Each structure stands twice: as C-alpha cells, then as structure tokens.
Length: 399
Image (tube, rainbow, N blue to C red):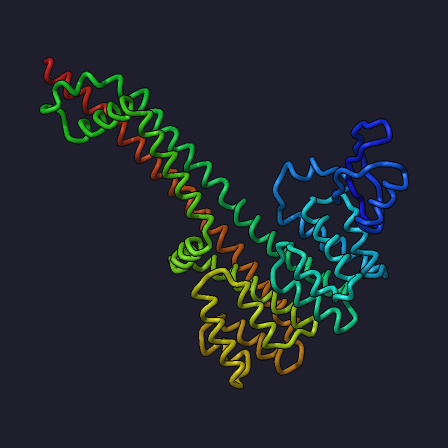
C-alpha cells in the first residue's frame, strides 16, 4: 500500500486536504468517492509529508540508505514485493518514495526487479542493476543488494575522505587570500601619498602601493570580476567533460597523480570483486568496473585490458601488459585466477590500494600545508617590505 495526499471538496462545498493509504491511485479515488467527497487532486507522498522532502536535493547518502534498508529486509526473509511496498511508505526523500512506488507497479505488471530498478529513475551506478540481475538468477537478491549498498557506501566514503582531506588546505589558502586582500585594501592605501614621488621609489614599493591604491579605487569592479570568475569555474566544474579533463591532467602530476590513480584503482578492484562475488560473468564485470573508473586515461587502459581478455589473454597478463597495476597486484590477480578465488583476491587488492592512497594523501597534505604557509607568508612579507621601502625612501628624500 502507498500513501496518497489528496485535496477534495466535501458535501458543504469546502476544500479539504489530507492523506490516506490505498493499493493504488484508483483505489484511493474510489475510497474518497465512497466517503461522498469530490476529488480535486491526488498524488503519492512520503510519510513525512511532501514539503519536507522537497526542501533539499537528493543526496547520495539518501539513495545508499534506501538500498541498505531494502537489502536488510530481503536478507531477513521479506518478499521483494513487501520490501518495495515498505520503502514506498518510508519517510525518505520524495524522489525515492516515488521511485519505489514505480518499482512496485512494475513488479505487479510482471517485470523483474532488476528491470524495474533500472527504469525507476534513481541515480544508481550501472553495477547496482547488474548485481540485482545476478541476484535474481542465483536466488540471492538480498545478498546482491547488500553488496551493492556496501560498494556504494565505500565509494561515498572515498569521496568524503577526499573532500575532508582538502578542507584544511582550502581554509588555509582562503585565510591567506583574505589577509592579503585586507592588507591591500586597508593598510597599503594609507601610504598612497608616497606615490607622488613614484620616480624616486624602488620598483617593489611602487608596485605594492600602486596595486593597493588601484584595488581600493576599483574594489567594486574587482569583486564583480572575482565573483564572475568563481561562477564560471563552478559552471564549468559541473560539466562532466571539463571535470574529466581536469582529473586526467591532475592524475599525471608527480604527487597528486599517484594518489588519484591509487584511489581510482581501489574503486575498480572493489567493484570487480563485488560483481564476481555475485557470479556476474567476467567480461560483463570488467566492462562495468571499467565504467566506474573516473580518470580518462585509466579508463582507456582498462578498455585495452578488456579487449585483451576477450581475445583470450588471462586477466593478470592483460593487466601486466598494459601496466594497469603494481607487481603485487599482478601476483594477487594471478593467484586468484589459479585458485578460483579471484573475487577475494581483488577485495584484498582494493584494501591495499585504498590504504596506499590514504598514506600518500597524508604525505601530500604534509607537504601542502607548509607550502601554503610559505607562499602566503612570502606574499605578505613582500607587501610589508614594499611599504617599508616606500617609507624609508620618502624619509631619505626628506633628509
């Protein structure tokens, strides 16, 4: 049963709104008509009310929680129809509630769960649908959805870890930029009168005083320009093609690149392990894991690996031929292929790469923080030196 929000007109001609539960929209309309009410509008809603869910956008954590709850019910013996109906009544984001209501209707029409899930409109990675399809074939849908939720949670944890790691350096840089801006706007302009003797000032003093004076006089235009640049960068950052190009170039840098590559490889290993553990065919699993890679040149390399495996090469040999992993990775994959425990070996490989990525990230931050402090301190010191040179030069001329 789903919960519907209705607006009706009663026998007295007054508009009345409320909610009721029914097996479908038609059943809800019939129930309202049986009560002697004229239906004006009828729509499905979340248990907590539609207004609350629409106040924020759908987050990855919302989708992960919904998949986790579904997996928990399925592994506890609840039928797929009951589990989906329960999710359609849960106090989730309205988009999730509507998606599960759609899945429930498709199940009633005889559609398999994987097909209904694919057409639900939920922002799910491709491997989730493939895991659901594998779970239907093996009769272990609950386990497959639990693995899907675990993989989604793992990827979200990686993204959160990266964002959190960059918070302190970002705050440090912003604080430094603010300090430099304040000096140029409020400290340096106090010595602007020294520019009357510009021909007698040292070059550094002239540049510092001139910059401060110009910023003070054109602060509105400068601020508007900064806002426009930030807005343009934000718009470009939302474009997948631009993000991929930036990520591709960053992954080739000496220090940052190794961290990004190791994190991406850890994600690839984890997805591939989950797919193989649920008996997805190797070629299909490799294709889905390749799609999950975010760095373009890594995705292209894994495409070459997929083609090599399709042409008869072993996975370990194909990975080694295209330099996709480290020596330890090749050995683990080769042992997994020989022993028939490739899924477990890939899971171990994922943990190794994830830990190596964390270690490299910490080392990178150890370098970034003092470097940012040195750069900001150098800029502030240059400003102060320019002001001092201007003052001393003016005193020398006065003498």
